[in-house]
Length: 148
Image (cartoon, rainbow, N blue to C red; front, side, top):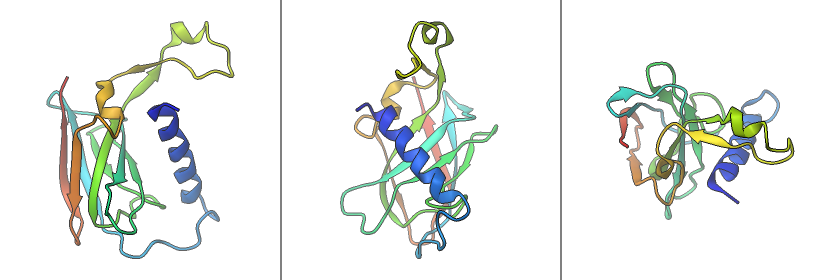
C-alpha cells in the first residue's frame, strides 16, 4: 500500500474523530503547535502536514493540519487546533492534484493519478528527512522549509 493511500486512510479516520459525536472527550496532555510551511522560499498554501510519532514517543498519536493561503498551520489530533503530545515526530508534507488528463483513462474504482506539487520525497515518513521535537509547552513558531 502506497504512503499516499495510507495517509488518505488516516486523514479520513482523523476527520471522523473531529466530527461531533465521534469523540466525546479530548486527549489530556496535548500542547499547541503552529507553524508555517515554505516551498522554495514562498509560503505553501493548501498543503497537508502530518506528524507521526517517532519510536519511543510515549502515548503520542498522529496529528495533521492543512496550510492556509499564507502557509500557516495549526495541528490537530482529534479536534481542530487541539495540538499534539510533546515528543519527537517525523513530518510529511503533501500537496497533490488529480492529473485530469490521465484520470480520464483510469476506471473510477482505481486510484486516480496525481501530480505532486512538492517533491515526492516529502510525502513519505521514510524519505521526508523532517524530524521535529515538540517540547512540554508546545511550539507556536515552527518553520518547515522545503526545497526541490
